[in-house]
Image (cartoon, rainbow, N blue to C red):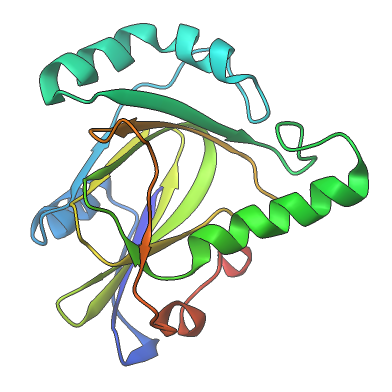
Length: 193
């Protein structure tokens, strides 16, 4: 179940809002310029499936969003806890999954909107906007669009299991500009959800 928690950025222990109501999640996020929608994610794909399988299964949704929003590049991040899409050797898998998780955990910005459609599993987006932190647990069927230059971080958890289709206006794909802030260290991680 998708959920949102909101905190003052200087008080991660006091929840200002918590909701599992999709309409309230969408309205709360719309108030700070973030798009949140729930779409159908019924194609037979699962975490660890190949990019090609996911792209083929959701070809119509991808084409529609590219046409409507003008996205130039689309890719897939598909991970399960076994690291099937990362490496074959178990020690290398564990190290690569930890490195990948760490890459997303520090507060960063992008010069374009960050758009994700979750077609399996879950991930925790944390957005740092106007003195507040908005933690959004995205689940299968959730589409989130974080506006360009919004400080945020993402946690896939220590045992990831998710598939997200990512949309970009930048042909280079995912490019992070790290803020250097340690704020993300004070807030929730996915394993505590």
